[in-house]
Image (tube, rainbow, N blue to C red; front, side):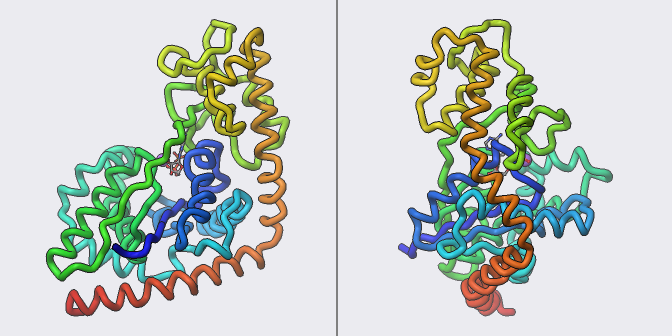
Length: 328
Ligand code: ADP
Ligand code: NA
């Protein structure tokens, strides 16, 4: 079997929130210790599937890079790069789009969801972006891909396209496997029935990595719970307080049951402040590092340039081989 190689990407969407960090970015850091070869990409080509302001997009790529580094992605261990600087992503995407049927894409839930919110049902790019994701992964002959459950169907598409290519042109792509996150989904602080998301319009629903301690306290103080004042962990029947326990568990490393035991006698209102303090303690070094790095644009672009060179060293021979096999 081929040497293990991990690929993952994240869109440059400003400062990540607590859900992104606890659900994805934190595991990126541990994967770079576990696997010899990992590639992490700021996938700006995916962002332009919906309208973007050019200056904001440029700034967001650097902000996301600063956040990844601040969370612990180490550019000496991982290849950290900007997707659009490696042209083979789009080029391989084209070839693979010719191996993918329209109905296969039309049935993906993400298309149904995202196209509804766009004028004229959205762009052709929005329709075929899952194929670009397939190319992102296969371009490095990746063997493992960390995915949230919302992306599981896109990894299945990747496996299908890899098999189709191998059947048609000869064994070439390893069939990549999912590294399913065991992390619990973090819920909105204002509506514990939906996940914390960058697109949530409610101001106090989402905690960003750069929020100040005061902002974090205010958001947890206003977190929606129920009218029982006891702290228990019961995600089905008490999603609000259970979300707070889950966040507390994720930042402290202690089991929910242990935290519930420790919180016996506390009112929900008091417990909210305990969780806020735990989150502040966890995020403060990250926030300070993000601020330091955001001020050093030269350093950030340098990291991305080095990453681009390293990524292309893998990508170019793979893409060239694909072209030969296809007859291009
Ligand atoms: P958003 O939902 O805010 O648009 P993305 O879809 O860009 O976030 O997700 C980026 C990464 O963060 C994905 O790996 C996704 O699974 C993870 N993620 C997003 N929201 C959450 C959440 N609330 N809890 C846990 N992980 C999350
Ligand atoms: Na999303």
